[in-house]
Image (cartoon, rainbow, N blue to C red):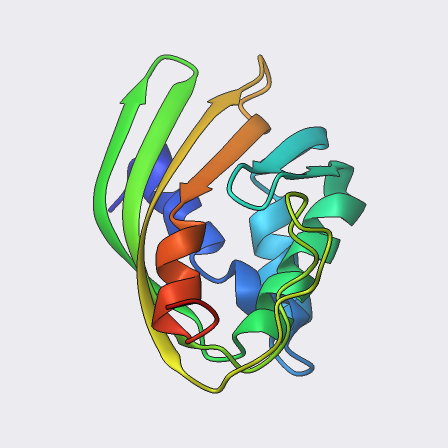
Length: 151
């Protein structure tokens, strides 16, 4: 890998594991080493915003709850100046509730079913090279169909 965006993806790909009782602290420290303390992390599909390192830690805990076995495969990365993007495929099992979606205000219950999602992340780094903006886009409807929450 070697390029900054590839290294960032490798750290971000383990965001759900940041809440794992054994490996979580090391994964969280690695992920946060790329991020400004003032990061604004947006989950566009869930209509949720997480602020700062504490917010990123909360986001990782929600992801771990949703899918304790989540993995990510990088499809492509791009970088231009302080802007970056990557496309990924996310695999997992819906092992726990997904936090309240802003559109419904209700938690989505666990179903135990497998899912595969395509995601796109775009973001920006600040003058110090740390991520100040991270936005995830994914198909919430496709997720809900795959795990059996909607027909």
